[in-house]
Length: 433
Image 1 (cartoon, rainbow, N blue to C red):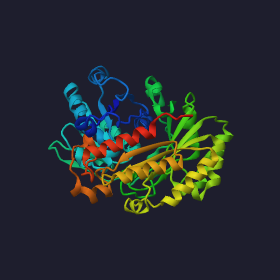
Image 2: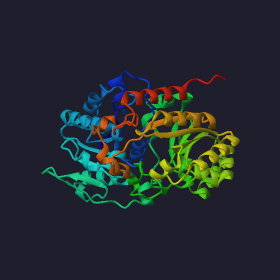
Image 3: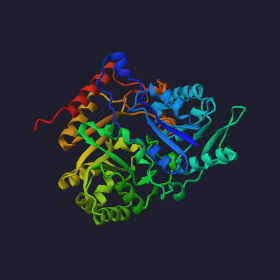
Image 4: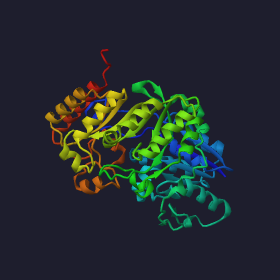
């Protein structure tokens, strides 16, 4: 089969830009479409292409569909990209009516019914590496695609049938590496602009053992935490031989200290000389400082920490499972090791001017190198969405970019966005040194 996998363009709309002329809030990071590379890795024997519309011109979409003549067209989508993917799927059906279409990713896994539309034949719920392969085999052999667990299948009558999939280690298909080669033409564009770094992605685990109320990661694995073998991670790092900075993709990197220590040792034994970024929790840093010393020697350059808030009662409401004291202690440990911090913060629409001032003061006092504030957004399928559904005033998913308030703000909206934009500019202004 010919299979085209499509990364949608940067999508989403901006309330501060459209209504108040504030253009400085948008934050765009071009990272490689690792989910599609991973899916492609398990499609050996088929002709697979990846079209990354975050880099390539959107106008090329129809021409690629026409020239490649795919039998199956697959899309991935974050929540703010969901409407864009529907539009692309409709265009695909017009250009090549005989092609089947499928969507997967975070939004499909959290709110699959959103995609129960005529332009989509299948919806992949959760990890798709094994289930997509099973679907392709069913389509090729004339089997019944509705029997593939983890794939919602549209019938002739327009209804969808779905068999849940219990995800386990077999769904990782670790003997099949990602097809990093399929995005070679885009590789130079995958940059972290704030740090002027090109970056490659390597998965170390899927899912997360924690259940933060705002997080949409859990449904990807049915709320299981599935770690990859050290050997497969080392293999993938080595495949990115020309990339000097590796982002270890795992919502809870180092959450299993024994495996993390084993990986650091294996990196040293393999003679790999690269820098690493990793997502970590502050409580992990506090509990295992020696692990981070070991990783500093292995090349750990920076960590991303979801601090989220600077008040314990707000963290408790988010079901974060960590507190401000741990945050501060973790910052001290990391800075003592020379590891820089990308700090994620969530700004509530309930913020008043004093809350913005307090967050700016905390970031300054703690000397967090790259603070990344977002606006509290109840993403469909999360506990936060269920809790806040009655408060939502913006239902259009185009605005679910984490830079729009989709519930009412306590301050006048124009004031809220002005304060947010001013804080963002302060956080990201060039250092005087």
